[in-house]
Length: 167
Image (tube, rainbow, N blue to C red):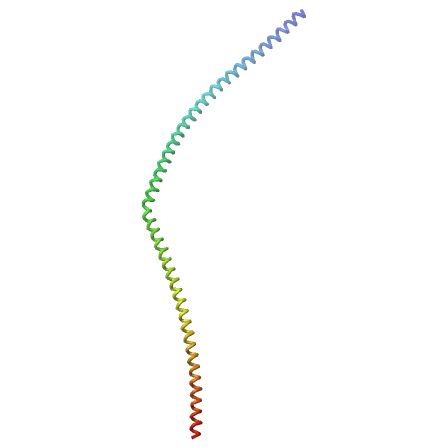
């Protein structure tokens, strides 16, 4: 009987273990179903996200191509405008260059005339200086001659006075 009780006890324990294992198995099966459902939902979300990303990438590629085309058109238009501007401004630039050349020539001629005028004034100053010295020399000679004549006149006057007294 003790053996029978031990056997019953083992059978009960084994039954309890089997129930526990079965409960764990059911819990794991339920958890597996939840995980599969979550996985399916995540896969669907991922698929939608990938589709949206592909659509966005396609849209961005179209916009990028349009931006490249627009940039190229603007670049070509800018080149055209630059050429037009250069063509329109070239005559003015040439005229400005010609006027600048004329101005430089006039400034050069004016400088040459001023230098020639300065040389002429220097020569004139030199001539005036020579003439002044000549006038001063002549004045000195005239003063000397006038002194000599006064002295001679005084001698002649004395000689006359002496001659009249002698007579």
